[in-house]
Length: 242
Image (cartoon, rainbow, N blue to C red; front, side):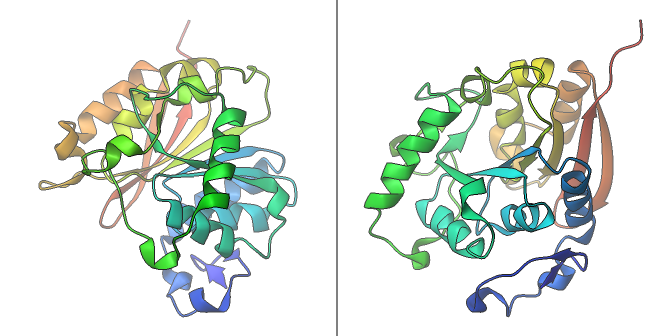
């Protein structure tokens, strides 16, 4: 399938019927180009859902590595299935929310190891896929991580890092839990920003201006390159003027 009309992805038969050719073409183009420009990079796919961006990354480069994050275990199972025709040893998973405050402090490796055990024990199936957020009644039973904790051991000259984030309104929660990461590692960011009046950012008490102000304070330049049901931003670190 040509996802977004540009990214070649081999996927299981049950996913082929979806209209992937027209799926977020601008975002897929920026995402794929980043992987082509950084073929040995690391991608954090935060809000992986069924794993289409993880698949795009893995098929765009034989050396890129991906960590898929989702609070829904069925979504992580779907991501594993979606990417089954790519080299699976380049894909890891973290079950949990990513936010400003954590309920557990683990390194990236420890969170991956914990998720591996959860996936092995998981008895559900793909019918259990659903969007979950921090306001769900069962959210307390799902780990919540800060990127600052997860990436605390990652050194500043680590390979290129891209954070792709689609969390239905919790964008600033993710970023505020990554303040040190933004300052120290300076990753590129590909954000889906949800400026809706009845859900999205507003349910967290945030606005798009709040998100942009936070990024500006961390010396990030925002490029709003597309808008559909949400806004799509490419954000890159720009050193402040001397």
